[in-house]
Length: 120
Image 1 (spheres, rainbow, N blue to C red):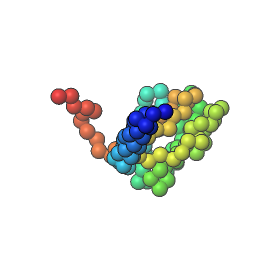
Image 2 (image 1 turned 90 degrees about the vertical axis):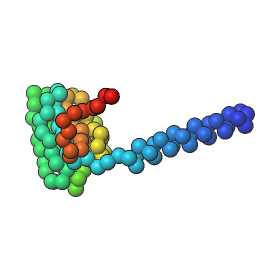
Image 3 (image 1 turned 90 degrees about the horizontal axis):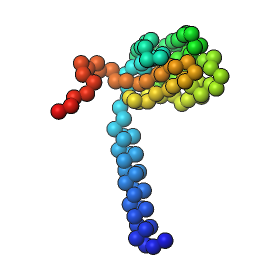
């Protein structure tokens, strides 16, 4: 490997780390946990209030816990239990997904806006 190759690899690595830090530091704490099943919103749980919420559907059940501003799935009757083993989430854009139950828990901001995006 030539010296120029090593320098290029180092520069690319530094740029990648820089982008990762930029996006990590820009992430904002969310205000709500939006619970959807098969695309239908079942609940919006404020992160400021500790609560347990059970979602029961034809696919099965999930018990969602909000505690100390973090959201996790405490119990589910799905076979693989990946959603239960997922880490707690609290930043806008983070999600927990239970594929067998078609359930998505997504952290969203508190502010409700009229428009999703603006294209100019």
